[in-house]
Image (cartoon, rainbow, N blue to C red; front, side, top):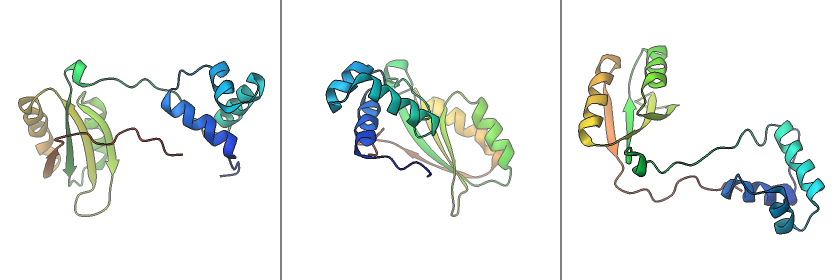
Length: 144
């Protein structure tokens, strides 16, 4: 990284990770720095791609998609699985991994039945192994 962040940048990043909608004025109060200085730092962090975007966190349970499953897939059809996952509304994340299985898919469904339908549609791509999440303990952890 050609731009090392200092402690003030870290404080600003921590605040934004907890609340991406926090105003410049609130951040400036929290870090005891002027609003123009905070705004300038945020713009520099965006320009350097340290801040790559802002997002909204959804409560998937309230959207009837509260069941989380991790599916390991072993396939030789790499582009097909990418295309499949991009089209599947149940898929929230897709990772290329090492080991016996080469893909990890994170899926959000409403029910076991919906998960079973999704898994049936995966059969054509190769063998898979599913792990249903019983409880979410740590998610969206602040990294700084």
